[in-house]
Picture 1: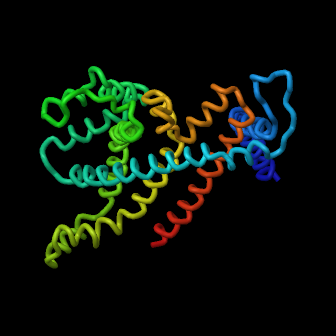
Picture 2: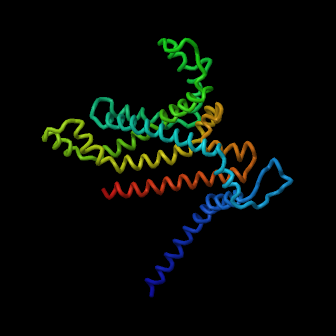
Picture 3: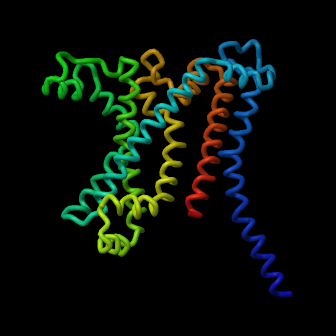
Length: 298
């Protein structure tokens, strides 16, 4: 009997500790989610306050899906995501391979690698905006000194180059994180496997494709998931460097959502866009989760 009483007390005490956390999560996370969905089902346009908040069902979602601007933003977001992640994964993997070797000052290089990633995203974006500046940017000065251009160019004012400038800024900041995560995965691979492969006469390339990549596959998959979900929601670096321009060349889906809600004051449409982004990210997460499970089983 006493043991049962003690167990009940422990259960009640545990609930007393957990309930405040549930309340906090409900206020901070679930309530805004419910209100955002409620808003997305209404026509909430602050430029037309007289019309109130009429219920329109899924009209906001239907109008967005019919909009060519939405699909253009999705294409830009997908392009940014694919290109930036591809570069980050390749460069990050090469850096991880280098830092996994034993050489002098390896610890110093590992520490310095954290600097770009540790910088706030605002600082990173402003720095690269200055570098690509059309009047006094360091990038123009460098290209002119080595003779590749005759005069300074506005890299952030041209549609094709603006997107790639944003990608460069993102790659510079995130690649160190990718490298460190892959380095952690490399250090879990036993050295004895490489020694045995060397004894068997395997070349460095053979060891890379037969030992390193297969055993690093779970880590690669996890890093790919993290970066895909993060890159698809990119906003701050675009907002600071280009503000979605020029000619909407860098208007990714998150920036489009920001414009609808806080520039055009159409909170109903903005909330619908936010939920569409959530659905896309959730779908990507589901696909990747299944993929991760297969690799872990492997």
